[in-house]
Length: 297
Length: 196
Image (cartoon, rainbow over all chains, first blue to last red):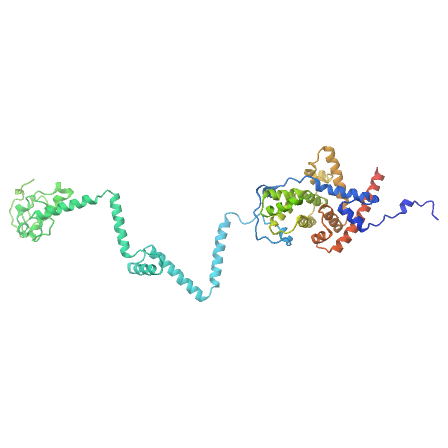
């Protein structure tokens, strides 16, 4: 018996969803007719999947535009927590400090490693560093001559390289000097010719040859002042020094200022006041000779 | 949107970092991911989706599997992102300007702008707001299951893996979630009938 005040629709409880209805809901299949609200909800939610993709922003936009540099060492997919981990801090050390910190970090790491080495390893490292330093100095030719030769020979015996020896260094110096002379306009051939001519002249003039002591010695002031060619040989007699000095003076650029004659040697202390120049005189020479008697060129 | 057979050629290129392949994956999955984040109440669903895809693409080289597995993986990342955001939000006091308080779906403006017309946009906004309200009324666990299964097209097992639950627990949650959903929708219709 039912009460007239009861409303059958209000009393009816909705039927529980069975598994088939649940799977149909999620799979987008047709639901029972009395579940149209759920069906409409599912359709509305799925409609989001058919919207156009939003415009990517920032870094993602750059990645989609230019591609991504994939690191091969990334962790596998299972480690999702790493993928979604905290972002790197935007702030950090100021840029000007980063290189300095890098250098100091490297140095501290190096010192830590050195400190961790054993005594033997430290000694070996020291020897190796010393050997490397000596070799480098040898390669630069900066060692003392005996050491340089030893290092050079040792290196050439052990390795296919050769380091400069002392002789090599001298040869190199010669080559360098030659190059420098060339660059500054010195002609080797001209020097050679001049030397040859000079040699022949010296040989022809008996007054200048060291072998002809008779003409140069004897304090012959007239001969000395005769303007003969310059003498090159060493005087064999003290008396010939004046002649040789004058001749030498005449070969210099200052020959215009050289005296024309050599004063007669006088005794020490009796030098003539008329001497225009301080040309050396032979202590044993005759005094009283006229210094101006010599032929002036 | 499914890539189907194209996926087999897109994935290797995407794993090498090719921009065109990454873009194809993004276009295929981004709408559903953004929808998931939106109905989960994300403050800026599109920005959060950007982070999700960046994280996914950076780890793509180590991925193995098919399109379903990739989809499941991307949604599991999205789910973790939304959990993180909820935690952040819980730690800070939310300050909402009075003028914006009534807008509700302000974050969806850019998304809605893709609609064809102003009227449709308005209807879309109303519908989206209604959906969000209904989803918010569900218990968080039930909402996670319902949305992952509907928008992510994930199976019970994949949903369980994404949420860190057993498949049996997911089945129970989806069952209770649909019951609650049906009740909410009926109540909503009744409320509209009374107010109308």
